[in-house]
Image (cartoon, rainbow, N blue to C red):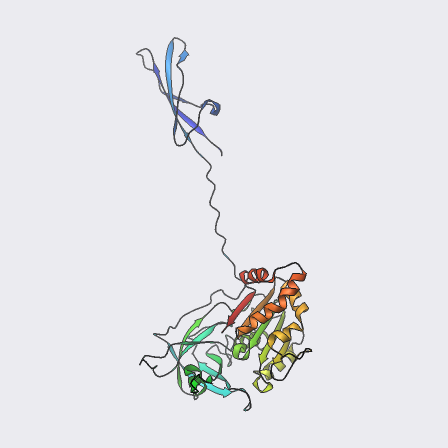
Amino acid sequence: MATTMNAAVSLTSSNSSSFPATSCAIAPERIRFSKGAFYYKSNNVVTGKRVFSIRAQITTETDTPTPAKKVEKVSKKNEEGVIVNRYRPKEPYTGKCLLNTKITADDAPGETWHMVFSHEGEIPYREGQSVGVIADGIDKNGKPHKVRLYSIASSALGDLGNSETVSLCVKRLVYTNDQGETVKGVCSNFLCDLAPGSDVKLTGPVGKEMLMPKDPNATVIMLATGTGIAPFRSFLWKMFFEKHDDYKFNGLAWLFLGVPTTSSLLYQEEFDKMKAKAPENFRVDYAISREQANDKGEKMYIQTRMAQYAAELWELLKKDNTFVYMCGLKGMEKGIDDIMVSLAANDGIDWFDYKKQLKKAEQWNVEVY
């Protein structure tokens, strides 16, 4: 602590004659310190024939450390200028259905549809965001249906390349409940049944968790089950089907897609074209659970397929420009944890602590249901 002491000293003569006030500096070693202002009173000082009483009020000026500036976190993702919640449930945007087509085979276990809606540039989303859909009609309580969020399956330019459309990948939900009744998901069936030209109420865009990394040289590992492929189709279109002045992907995009049957594979033709176009930059591995098995005879789920590349994946995860994105069924994350625990332990690393670090660094991104 640096201390400066100033003493304002009044000198009063023992005689009646006046003596001008003056000031002086007092050596610090002559002062006893206490909190706040402090006072110093000397013994009488004899100067010539006059005796003076010295009273001094001392103040200290302490160097106060400048508070450290809060360092603003710089995101590794394409987050700058991203827009969220331009349209909300109470005031949604009304778009038009331009295209709605089934993209699974007739013998697939369930239907998945790809649909394109117009938004005329009013919903400026980024790859990895979601939009909300409000189905027509009312619920059993006579109120409008609640908004349902869907991951966007098109790049920011949209399937038509004019930044005026948004695409979704939706599985029709139909199941039998405990009472043996057939139940249809309200919003998924509304969407899958939409005819071109129909209106659709949209909200959003929302979400920042699944935004793409800014680094065009990054390794991007994408793990998807079923319609969880949606955000990764948006990534891959930007990486391999589009030209941008400010972005050219030179890294590695590695997709793992899990489905029950070959007839359930989604966007396979597009991925084949990407692979042919950029074989050094794009890898794709399918896990077809009802048709494939590993060497132990176990069903080929996404984590089973990843286990075949476990050592390679672990080495990639040790790099600070590797980003993992996971979208789809919740159960797959535990399966991936099971793979990584032992590999990390071999390097003396606790996998779950390491995963927390990856999350903090925006390198582990999960959107599961």
